[in-house]
Image (cartoon, one colour):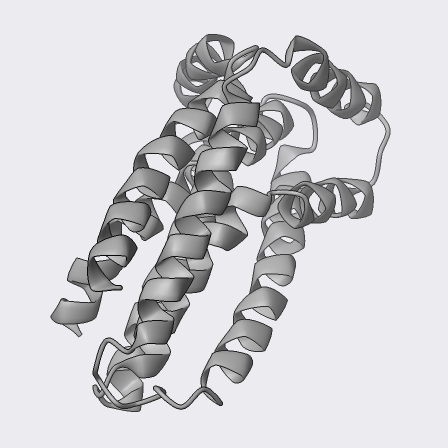
Length: 222
């Protein structure tokens, strides 16, 4: 299990750094009726990623290298492809996107006083579905799990770790406000103000770094 975690931790870190979902949850916990809405955001995002995990793990478990514990050629091909995709995404994300950030904030604030938790669940699900870079981070990480020879319970622990990492952007704001109240709201809003206007660029830096790592690792294997 520790071997798998050693292989996937950069990918788990990349999956955990999703400023757009973090910003959504900060806006939610800073507003009225935040308990039910924060849970809705968690469930909306978690539902999307749960389906993705199930589909990808089911598909990867059918590959010839499943359970073999060896780094086959397909492993390096997946890493190279994921690396190329992440680098291309990084180039796009590192460009300024002020209008995209403003549209997201305006959309959430327009629902802040009257929308039901179901609306916030839908917003979180939509933002998770369109978070393509996180899916790219997860694909080689889940492939490392399926090809490992460790027992199923240990694989389940690694998958659970990855799943929690994916949900960190929506879990941390809710837990912070739940534990420390208004002080947590003020601290989260300071972080939010720093990120606002640069969310996509932050993701671009993460995608660029991990994309280069995957490209180098995959190329050496090939």
